[in-house]
Image (cartoon, rainbow, N blue to C red):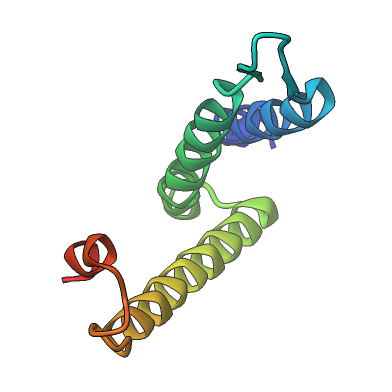
Length: 113
């Protein structure tokens, strides 16, 4: 379990960023500007992405170097995450290709094609 601290700490910090963003909330100042802790959103995504990218690398490494039960579980979880991400990207790409380009705006048409 100690081997996976490098992947667990960024994940937990990313979750803390999202929770703190929701707890702090946002408000409209008297001059009409929106006051919110927006920096927590990209930092949270960055930290969670780092942990999701490092998890398969570390679990594969540990699977071939003195494996334990937790290493096999972490490897399985990382494979499932990779398959879910690949299927999500496939579905999004197939949906974007099936859209009627005449019915969408010019900005969206440039992004899709």
